[in-house]
Length: 498
Ligand code: NAD
Ligand code: 6OD
Image 1 (tube, rainbow, N blue to C red):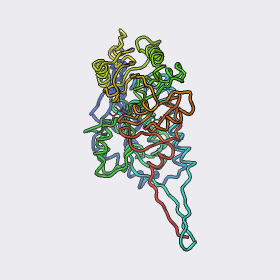
Image 2: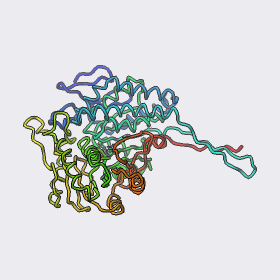
Image 3: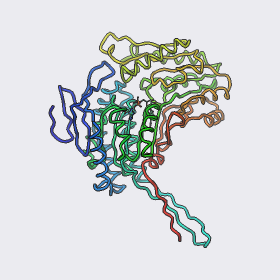
Image 4: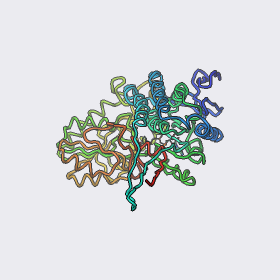
């Protein structure tokens, strides 16, 4: 291996070695694991897995940055300048970030250029703006002597925050938590998914170039249980944990964090429903559902996996959706316009297991249901066909369990009460979409859906000021806007008798 400056990336056999970033410099280990492209199974980088001693060193560096370093005494203006410099640093290396995200995920270039990387940048700018304009709460309290009391609320950082991220929107979902954590003055240990370590490693370089002091941002590569992920969640020096990933992983993290009674923010899985009323424009609804079911190969926590269509529109809608799904088939679509691969062979095996299960449970396969054949290197990738089913009962595994692939089941319904009962009958509660042109119905139905987010006649339209999160197995708490600042800061109420 060769390497020069503390933030320069090393190379081995012509491939980058993605290092851990601790106390302002990269640290490597001999314990390398491959970063594999799901497009064709090629190794795109080597990743240096961190060990428990490195997690320990990162926690000490973070604590030192807060207690002895400049970050602990930083002003809002200094942190805002750092966040803006980070955003500018990503922007300056935009194409490199795009290429790295695609190398890890195989996702399509349009999605990466218009959502993943720009939204990663926007998260830093948004929280810089928010922390600048944030006011503080105060209350005047009446007292028996008539003089009253003044209450006001101050904020300070929580301390050292563990940020654990998934692979589906790697930079976007990491920065969504990092930006508010840093804005509030915390130091961070970040763990990207083992499937997608690349952009987080570039981000470490950007942090250093932006002048973020050593120890404020630490990056640790590795796996979950029995590896770095678990070490972070069990470490007594971590003050709060914010996690995006599977609901079952959330349960494991709750167990690990329980002894320290650590604050947790969880954004977990979903089995999101969509309702299409007969008054909806069928093409608009089919376009919308094709987007919400198949974008990013269905690997979006907010993706629609079950659709309920009012009976008079059912057949037309199914055919309209079929045409759109077929156009996205990776082997048939024009280059760059079809869906990309799933993240890995392991995830494909899980998704294909559901394809088999749907058929065993009596589904009619409207389209897809298999693996595309390319006759080139992509046959070693993790592609599947976008798939639409009908005919499953509401208690079928494919209608109740999160699949996280390009799939949806479409069922007819007859009444508003009936469909609301079916949409709400889920162990999850993240997001829902309603397609209707009836204004009163839109408000009525949206208000009765039991999820953290409801879209009407759109999907994934995000305003970063709004609360984001889910109920039941979909998570704990909300982030977004002031909700993020509430999680990443501790408040003290000061009461002064006048
Ligand atoms: P995952 O839970 O397998 O992994 C997420 C992260 O947790 C990875 O970094 C992983 O290494 C780490 N991890 C795994 N086990 C751990 C453990 N025991 N202790 C500590 N860390 C551990 O999730 P994934 O497969 O990467 O992502 C897909 C899932 O994420 C889907 O269920 C999806 O719905 C969910 N997701 C939810 C949201 C949301 O905002 N609600 C957003 C994106 C993804
Ligand atoms: O848009 C966001 O801010 C956000 N948290 C999206 C999550 C997508 C889940 O896959």
